Amino acid sequence: MYIAMNRFKVIKDEQKAFENVWLTRESRLDEVKGFIAFHMLRGPEREDHVLYSSHTLWASQEDFIAWTKSEQFRAAHKQAGERKPLTLGHPEFEGFEVIQTIENPHPQEAL
Image 1 (spheres, helix red, strand yellow):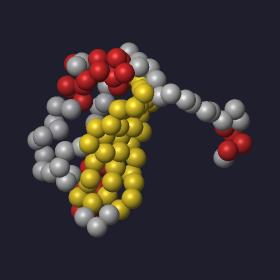
Image 2 (image 1 turned 180 degrees about the vertical axis):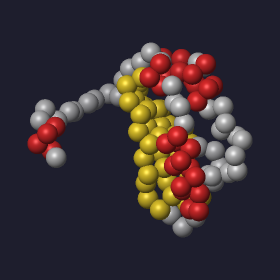
Image 3 (image 1 turned 90 degrees about the vertical axis):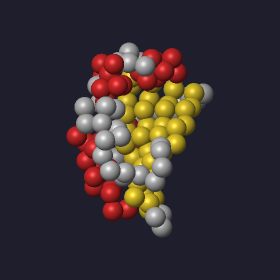
Image 4 (image 1 turned 135 degrees about the vertical axis):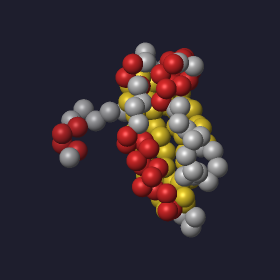
């Protein structure tokens, strides 16, 4: 498995607009081979920004790379540079190959 993450430093006054972009966009991830799951995460608040991270789980790094070259990727990101800046700079990409997974055999008991 492969995890692709982007970290965003969102300008404090732009949190709602940033979240709205993600909540209303058509990702088309479900059309692509190897896609497993997506999470948009809101993190800690700092002096000048709030940290967000997109977290996407893929069957392999090759599947992720294929997504970045796909028509679905272009469609999902077509308006990326058209609006006023919501972040401090560009997102910071981090990619990770999963080397170990431990899952709860009784997930209902964790609730």
